[in-house]
Length: 405
Image (spheres, rainbow, N blue to C red):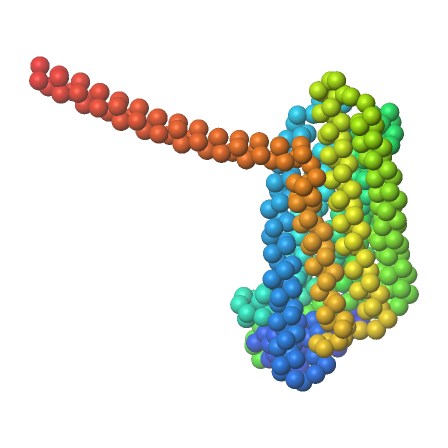
């Protein structure tokens, strides 16, 4: 691995030599494996901090990640069913965008599980020590992937809200602007821009290898390049610009769109109370539109509640200048942004189930269809076995008759 242009390589080599014993034995209190230094020598304090981190990272965040992955996979199946049943010529953008949102939620949950739940579990239990031998790669490349996944998820939420806003407030324009083809192009642009924004982070930071003479093996260590050590880059690009583009602008847009959507849904309900709908297909279409709008409002409100925790954490860390260790209020707060992010990405399935009547119906149809397919397969296999058995009996009886003749 190249080590050129990394100003802290000598310091990394020195630190690696100093902690290689702890590193190879995977001391759970090491600053590299647990990412914090203890502010107190009290073993009871350290133990309580370990239990606290394990309880939140594994007991809460880990369960939310697993639950959310399963729920979003079911949502993908439901939205795919909506997509297949829609008219090809006038196909709405809603199923595609909601599928993209569910897929981005799955990506967020997987990255959080790998970066938060797995290291906390391994550090607390002492299992799978090999994980920490390659932990430098997760530090250098894993956290930028988490940032990309969360940013894509944020802007897809904005995109879904914008399309729903046009479909509800300006329905005559939805035929032109909220099509399947345009939604696909919008998704490509969002993903491309977010990844492009994170490219400097991926290119600037590296992983260097340091040979350990004690353990006779290569130890990997994260090394940060010139951009990461530049205060102006950190202040302007990684802090100010990142806050504005990934938090402030999306948060304001989602808040404004939510207000208009709530008003539109309320007006639609009042309109339905005042007139009687005679055509069932019109009523079904209206119910579907209201289901999607109400579910999306709940999704956006949940996102607005869960989003601010991470920028607040970054702000606190920037003010403090470093990461305080066990016993400091920052240590206890540090776990909540990941927890709320996992909650935000795992809650959509419950919101769809609660607010979406058509979603519930389609999910039950899928479950019954799977059950029916299994029953049919079992029936066919039983019939084939019985038919085969009767065929064998017939052949044997024929052979017996010939033999007797």
